[in-house]
Image 1 (cartoon, one colour):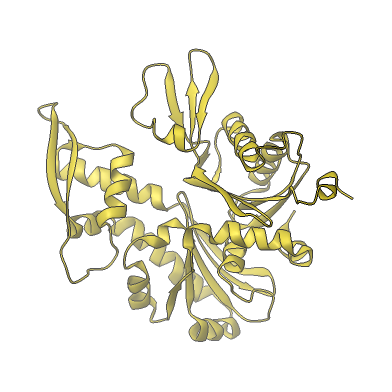
Image 2 (cartoon, rainbow, N blue to C red; image 1 turned 45 degrees about the vertical axis):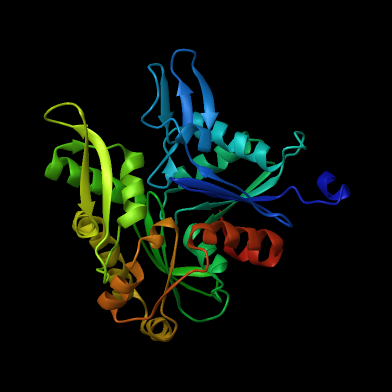
Length: 340
């Protein structure tokens, strides 16, 4: 019997280690942490000063000698030391009164990452005080979290749009039949918005401002009313702060390229799906998950482009971690979905 079980609670954790946000789920308690995947690093003293929400507040505002970095890029670990420290911090926050705990951890990873990248995630998590690590493909976890019947012999299509990657997968009998991963997500959308404003208005905006624009007036398909937003940045010509007003139509145009890449990935996946499973998808439709799925009218655009029903997961942001958490609660499901 595990030590933690003696005290009447489970120490196990499910972690959705995302490029933009990290979510942690604990059985019996639900989601115990949802924070940005950001670390503030002091280059002078060679130490990490802040992690998560506190570190994100520092992006674009740090003094010399302090940098806000993201340990993950395009869904994979880019900075091992920072990722390990971030995970250690998040695990400690998930079990604030039990510093001795070494939990079993299930981590969601992109379906198409290499074995080397999988090993890197596993080792970072083990060094962050985990006793045992299971990996699960994010599209499979998202499908479980969205309530799809993945263990049945029917085709389920999930489109998981994260911060760094978009993964389109057709799942049947607890496994991925076909998947397509493109390194386009919320981050690329933010970049596209910042570049557009720079080109059109000679105005330099930071990534936090670009993200706020996307959330406030960003959309993938026109709606009835025109929306505007006042934004502030630095004038590249005069070099002084300036304010401009932008419309949702302008932002929609700036997002064309990243959104088209997502639509193409969905189209390609539909083309490569075996006919029996394709007929299931015609009946069941496509399910959207991940924070990027919250872009306004993206479901309408995909419906127009594919001619198929498109539904949103109940809570797209937490679908992966809830699915991984469900696998922790059901050992038989965990054995079926865990990857080695």
